[in-house]
Length: 211
Image 1 (cartoon, rainbow, N blue to C red):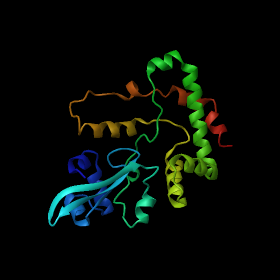
Image 2 (cartoon, rainbow, N blue to C red):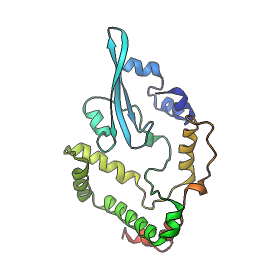
Image 3 (cartoon, one colour):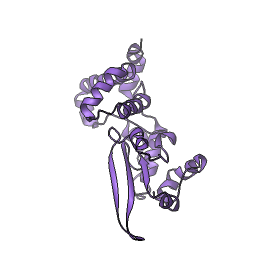
Image 4 (cartoon, helix red, strand yellow):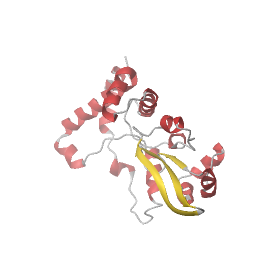
């Protein structure tokens, strides 16, 4: 865990408040590190050093998508999670990405896809049994506890309205400055088009999915 990265996105203060390890020394004492979306969204892992007597000669890590490496699975084998980025800050969890030229050429297509995406969110939230059955098929995990944890992660974090907020996007953009301090300033309106979401909110489409 790089302290400059933690400081840059405010995680040092957060970890101090939680009384959890925040320094490399603390992690060295533990003997391993667990990361839950710490550096890359939707990615978690466990890593530990390899010693030749007292000399570190390498490291071993397991990294994968949250669908397959969930906190429930990590804790099940006896490894505590130091922190979960979900506790720390607001950030865009799942977004639809396309080009402005495609929107201009195929606005109705994008509109229908956005509505289908929003309808799928409602399905996940309201039909947990069926949603977990589908999840089991595609992530190829049979452990009921891990499947439930994975389902709960998405059911909790996916908002009813797939709106992206400026504050959350700013958190991500600020974090990228640590790795690329000379990057150009990008404004919210340059990246985000909320017109499709605003239309669904106005015409009652989203509300109708939860009646």
